[in-house]
Length: 560
Figure 1 (cartoon, rainbow, N blue to C red):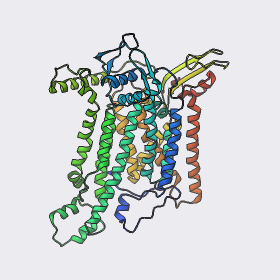
Figure 2: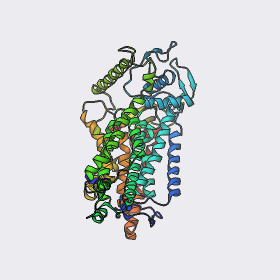
Figure 3: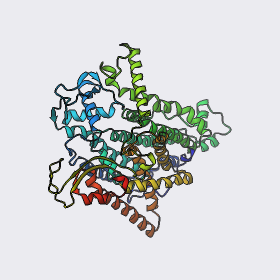
Figure 4: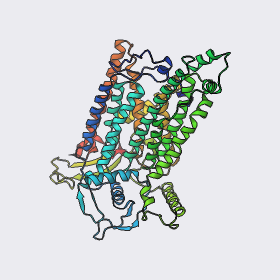
């Protein structure tokens, strides 16, 4: 992890026109090394980010209530959300839709934590739902899908701002937002009432807090080193202090670096990571990567500041708070997502061991063991299952819904009449944008090289976060898995592509020819991304198209 500890200027920094930042006289050289200034085009940065987010939000909300029926795994999560909304726990839905409806006294056995379903329950409260007798309240399709659209759109805005901060470039922030917002998988998951969009969005929020904490911690370190008053950095301070008698506190500061105090963004990162685990347990994978990066960056910051013992300094002065933020805080947040189960009496296994406090915890732990056993033995065959490495090449996207209609007939869904000579198709296919996934996968190699060659912390973030989020899935080769499990990988693929785009653009002092070639390359890539999204849009959004048009979009046998 030490490869990410030295910040060096690279061609991906501050390439936006008009974003040169002149450090003020009061800003030390150490602060500039530890935390380079942000672009000064703050208003442009926000307006451009909001514009891209607005377009993404409109795309996700347009016709979001189509199809007007439950499809794919909505059959589980919409009902679980209704149970949480009305009872505080998931109810048994075996008699769902019958005259008697479900039995609220009988708890439902579910295999994912409740937070994502609570988000959907809040959305249903606002817009509508279908109760267990089949009665419709309000607009149920908007009710259980709006939360997904909101979180999917929010993730676009947050990733734009994260990329802008990482690369100190408004242009590259917008690049990341367009690539992310026009990806097919992110789009489809933002329009269906299932959990993965909540998991990914919470991880993006945790990523934003991780990067903000890095900047804030390094800026605070530079300020506190300067406040020692002995030199511009700890190396100079140590030289200046030679032969002098120092008090113990100052001697420790020179050896280990000063204490940094409370770090609120680190607390927020731990909170969002715990919340992601409250949607799906797999959020734990990313937590491990983020925690490793955070402590490695602490070591690197103290080394850059000139501490004589940076590793011991980080262990003594950063590790206790780091541990609190990345271990007990996520655990406490995860437990808090189960509040409905704890405070009600009807949850699954709630009173298996009795009614006391200890019995409650024994019941909860037994429930978690049952969930773990389910996931360990989930190996049922499914036509859409896929192996993890196939996700990166879009080997087997997931057909959420498909309806074929003969010529002159009215579709079962939406009542549209097919006028095509060869018949019509309507499909919702969970598939990524090839320009995003294929190029992003190739850019991972570039990120590994950039990390090893330049010790670039941004490359380390991409490689470590992607690796810890992806590789654990390879430990379960027989498990039934689907392409949409790869959604949490998408932000890191986009950030890797963004870093390579920055290298393609080159530094501001590059020749006009180099800058022109780089700008054309990046521009063509973004145009291709948007055009491919438009091309696949009909099979992402349940549009009726001729069967020949549907076949033209099935590039490989695994896509059918």
